[in-house]
Length: 84
Image 1 (tube, rainbow, N blue to C red):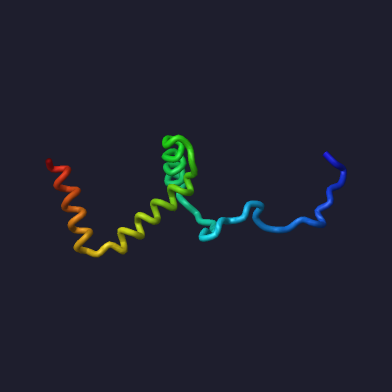
Image 2: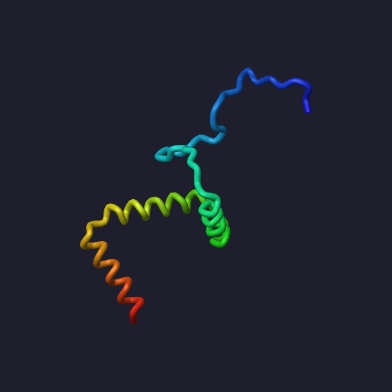
């Protein structure tokens, strides 16, 4: 280690820039939920648990935008498959 370091050219903020179209946020998640996503990412052969959380949120939003008739048809098809 050096006895002195020069930080005069240093900048505050994230070291790695956030890609366009993404925003860095801080949220609080329950430990068990976060552990589940980490485990899923690990079992899938690696990857990023944050990507899985993003996909889960996208799926939730897509279902919320789904018209009622389409939702009912999807649920009925799923239940018929289970009954057979």
